[in-house]
Image 1 (tube, one colour):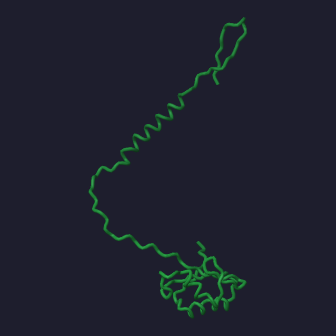
Image 2 (cartoon, rainbow, N blue to C red):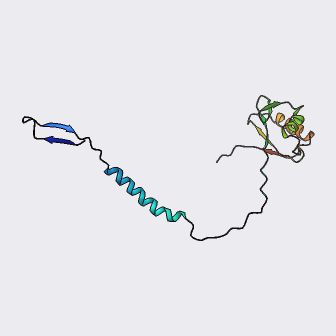
Image 3 (cartoon, rainbow, N blue to C red):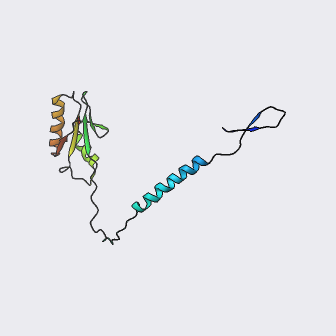
Length: 144
């Protein structure tokens, strides 16, 4: 903060604060930004003019949402977030897939806890095959 000393007032020095705003740092910052934008602006423009042909490729098909079956150590089986049973797993899967997807060509992803019994896992695999779901993928954790 700047102070102003005056010589008047009966021999005593009186200090009073200056009310002026120091704009020098503001002007310095604005000049630096102006220089940066002046240098960067020509780099952002394209100097070679090209008339591009229209794209006629059909839009790509978005992949359908995968269906996950999850097995818990206590024997619970889930399709996505909904609990199911081995006796109704085929019907529940068809309901989850909807009428637009072919169940015989659909890949089903199985996620099982590491403590799931092998017999429970094979029960799910057999129930899927009994209901014509032959494309199965096993999901594991990536250690990267």
